[in-house]
Length: 222
Image (cartoon, rainbow, N blue to C red; front, side, top):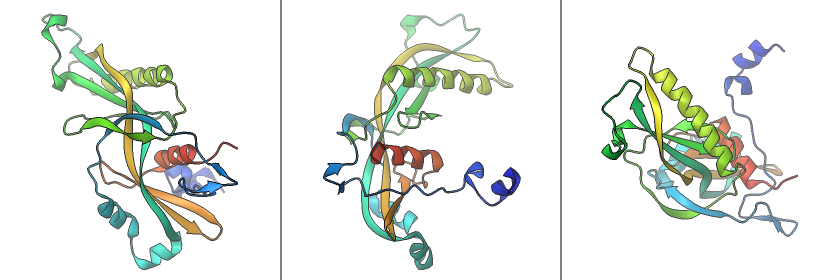
């Protein structure tokens, strides 16, 4: 089958849903051993979506539930991320001095998933970051996560400059671990277990990259 046909049929190349089969839910044990390492504590972004709302998003109709399997567990899961916040300056600004401080409207926050390596721009307005519960064990070291954030920030500023006055990255204001919440439902399909997830901040179903990160975090190394 050609790649174009594969995309039309909703395969992974088109962002289609690829199942991530688990041996057991994270809270279970297999052969007397837990499937993941010890959880890691970190500051966390406070969820905005309640569990009941996430369940409704995941539920769908009865036929959909039958197709996807039988729910067996539901939990709020925190994925390890690295939060980097930069000051941004106008490239030709002559009035800026380091003593003038930094305006929150002139900051760029980047969140890097420490399981998938994916970086994203995040708006901190309206978000609460507080000491939170443990996360799944991270794969990326802090230095590598910060490097990815720096590369991503450069691309964001370059794209934002199209047709506007260019801005450049200024001082590094924050660089710290940060946990991001997802509601995760585990479902049983025959002898296998799968899962699906909802972003606990936006309320949107998790995409393929997030599902891959969750699968990596909650399954045992082979």
